[in-house]
Length: 307
Image 1 (cartoon, helix red, strand yellow):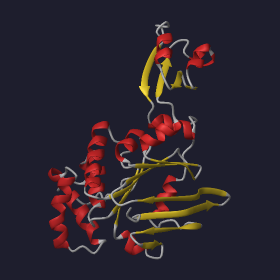
Image 2 (cartoon, rainbow, N blue to C red; image 1 turned 180 degrees about the horizontal axis):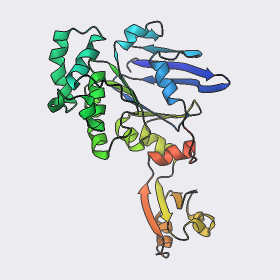
Image 3 (cartoon, rainbow, N blue to C red; image 1 turned 120 degrees about the vertical axis):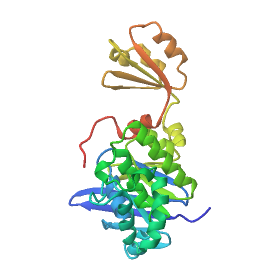
Image 4 (cartoon, rainbow, N blue to C red; image 1 turned 45 degrees about the vertical axis):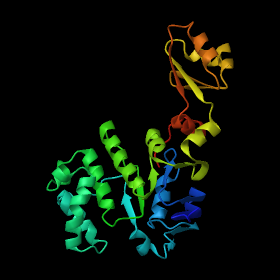
């Protein structure tokens, strides 16, 4: 097994009396996509900032590409590509100029960047927008341009902080396609996301955070099998909530209520579905357990304030 490309060991970060990241350890192997998921305030963004050397941990250490952060921050950053949660493109430059100017920050010469720019724009499906400014682009185009810009230095590791937030389904799928191409090329990715389908599509392993601590880690399907019953039956409609406290709940291993929907988690849904067939006024959905079920079981259904 090859040595990790990136390793964080026992990271801790406090702000006053609040511990934002608490004794967190993880690694990223070459060619792997590690997803970091968790509710608002779980410590995801602070973890990314420590990985980038923008925030110093109070305890613990980070090594990347055989070097230590923050002692070797400059050398590490030369091999990183970053797509932040918010748009940082220069509105006064064209798409091509955004790439060329950014390349200068890595010491890449103008001639070399002029040669790289068409390939980067083609990868981002933006060749036809080379002379357009960011203000003329759709949200999906801006995110793909940000990804292309993160690739100007041919990084070994990409850190992506919620890269598809705010995009419509078509734009998200195109972004996923580009990220999968990068993984096929051997790039490694650290991805934070609120989209469970995104995490399940892209990530070979997941790190689940809550209150700054790691509460689960592993491949998506393995985590689902470890923590959940295989079948889920959702029931909603008039009178659905009464089922949660009825004998019907005995047909499931676990029952949860969210809003106007009752969730039955079971190892075999056949008997439950047959019984629900006697209540035609209710609407049902029978499906396999998914990553969203896992997320909600491990972190709870209560909405939290951002922070």
